[in-house]
Length: 95
Image 1 (tube, rainbow, N blue to C red):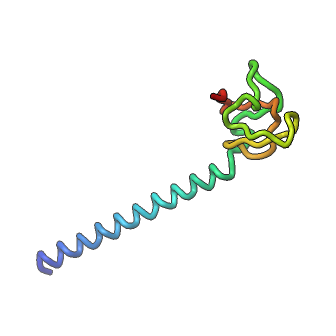
Image 2: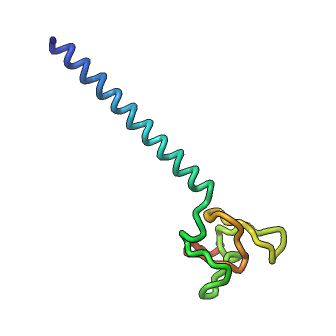
Image 3: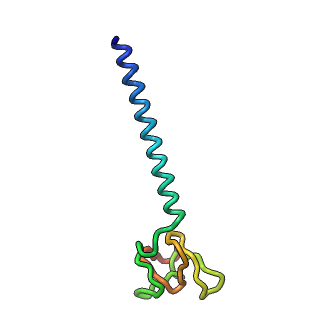
């Protein structure tokens, strides 16, 4: 095998490896976005339906209110129905 053939073979192998790495990275991004869209499990963030230390979901930047002030709403980061008086470890004050 000539030096040119060896060089071209290595170049092709490196191109394939780079393409495979890019595909794996893209798959990871898609999986992460899907997990975020689904929301984290309430148990993973220690969600409770009562306030903690004066903090509750209706005062959190991630909370999306329900139909009324007392109706359950949703969270931008946590899956499921969220009580306005609830709390979790992701609590962050509204700006």
